[in-house]
Image (cartoon, rainbow, N blue to C red; front, top):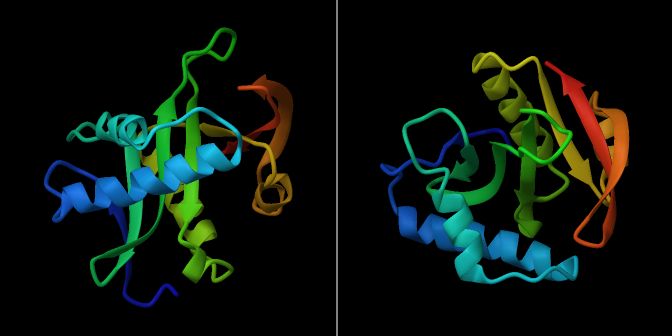
Length: 159
């Protein structure tokens, strides 16, 4: 899978940007709907648009091969009560046709290196169904929470 695969930030200069925004927004929208959350495609695209700048954070990293997006992951700060100014890994998604080939891990590792290059010392995430995936890859339990009526595990990884 890694052969000829590129992982890079989505920027205002990304070729075919509108197509990519639409596709990644659709991935996020479908994920929200599957979790029973209120969502709209327009809202998902607008959230990703907030990552389009030449600033290093927030960022959406896109894995693509031959110009076709295959997966993405975002890094952003949630300033929720009690969480401080933490950087969170969010919206890790791999296109169903290329799952179970290491792309999710490649995206996650790239995001960790990217965060470390920005001076971050740890990265946080929450998950409702992928705890084992992350635990196998060095993430440690840091608590639990309820987000949008869903119980989630909070995990942290030291960079």
